[in-house]
Image 1 (tube, rainbow, N blue to C red):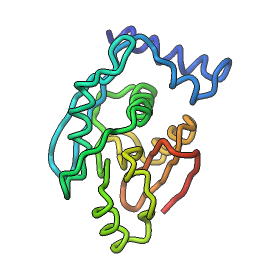
Image 2 (cartoon, helix red, strand yellow; image 1 turned 90 degrees about the vertical axis):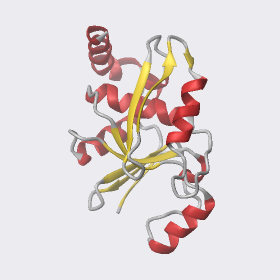
Image 3 (cartoon, rainbow, N blue to C red; image 1 turned 120 degrees about the horizontal axis):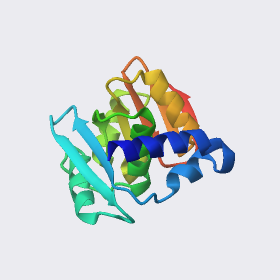
Image 4 (cartoon, rainbow, N blue to C red; image 1 turned 60 degrees about the vertical axis):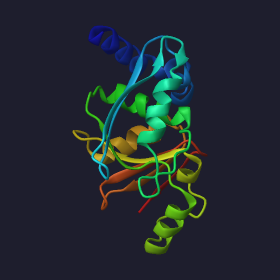
Length: 180
């Protein structure tokens, strides 16, 4: 499996600029299993989920993912955007890592988002976290600036760079970039 994964990664990276944009390339439904590893820094929970198998999303795994990325303050759960997991998987594949993403924030309830807005000017009123289309992460073993460059290269949505706080925001909304 590792040899196949390495071959796919090198083939994708080598041929990416020849035919497809990064967005088109990683939107492809490659017939492999896609697994994601996550660690929630607030709850201490770990998750390893195969969210795509051969040619389809695995709905039972999304139930686990939705629970894992819940608003940990309120317990509210929303269905996470499938494209967000595809984006995380793309980052993981290109970085060629088995390390889990550290999750700072996934889905946010309106109550939590408003509370965070009162505490910080960096929280958007209409945050994509409210739509379960955003995640704040870092990836151990990867410099945050390199993670930012990779997310910008993929052109899959918004990228917020928070170097002083040690995380990066990615979402599946319009392509845009900001730094805090």
